[in-house]
Image (cartoon, rainbow, N blue to C red; front, top):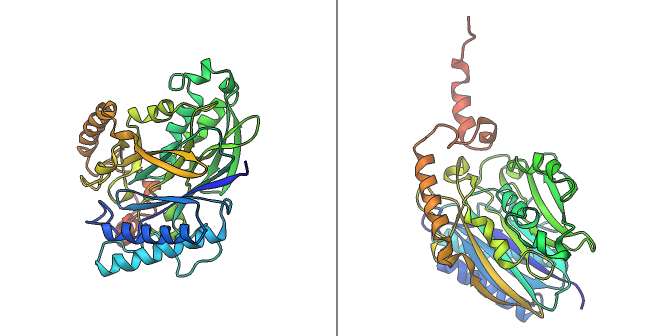
Amino acid sequence: MAKKTLSVIKADVGGYVGHSAVHPELISTAEEKLAEAKRNGLLIDYYCGHCGDDVALIMTHEKGVEAEPIHRFAWETFEAMTEVAKKLKQYGAGQDLLTDAFSGNLRGMGPGYAEIEFEERKSEPVLIFLADKTEPGAWNMPLYKMFADPFNTAGLVIDPSMHDGFLFEVHDLFEHKKILFDLPSELYDMLVFIGAPARYAIKYVYKKDTREPVATTSTQRLALMAGRYVGKDDPVMIVRAQSGLPAVGEVVEPFAFPHVVAGWMRGSHHGPLMPVSIKDATPARFDGPPRVVCLGFQLADWKLIGPRDLFADPSFDRARQIALEMADYLRQHGPFEPHRLPMEEMEYTTLPKVLEKLKDRFEPLD
């Protein structure tokens, strides 16, 4: 069976109300464009997902990774949605579209994307994670647990096909470099880097024997591209499961612990990443806390059978309760760290305007 591609391309082109959700007219616009692209043969299948104020175009096709026709289609779809957002006078209309014209692919243009090309197996479960009010490094800890932590993934111990571990490709988001780690032998080396998620993010996880990608994330940093604060990155992630890979239950298990991520209000605060059902992916309290949804699909001849709303499971209720307690605790810090991000991470927020206004009032110490 020939390789085909699963693409998830997301953008924030207008919030309803504020930054809490996506207006139904924007969703309808996206679905009309997706249906037309399928009729015209560009796409095999599609699904329009959303989390908070972000829309994700989930598409299967035969064009490959970073294909101009697919990226152009996504850009033009986001442009059409932006026009609807402007008509409705929505906040942040078109905020993730950083340029005026499409130029080949979406790299550096604002929208985030995760794409993976592979041969469909006899059974191909795929989990797609959409997050809001956080950054790409938010996936570091869950991916480490899924593919490297035997306390999370029993298959690493008892499944011979997983016993040798996986390869992790880590990107330096500031220096635009990448490095490949062979786990478990280089586990400690990798943790030095991925433990700093503001700068280093896991981009791909590969099977060792075939170098076939089994997980991928979006690693776009909007502030680094725009040179100013234009909203948080709200990353997406694709994870394949079962048959020599972590089971579906092992893939979602890391989110039973709502780990602390950067983002939340004005992209300037730490908060818990709360796993929620699709209907609850509407962050409102202090524009948060940060949310993540998980859409489970079964691929069948590259048709997207689903989604299953995997975090609607009540077994994640305790994770949500812990996240709310963490939110209470962190909110009590107000403008103080560790709730507010450290100064070096505030460079692309509105804080530099305050510093500029006061710079002449600082005097040397005696």
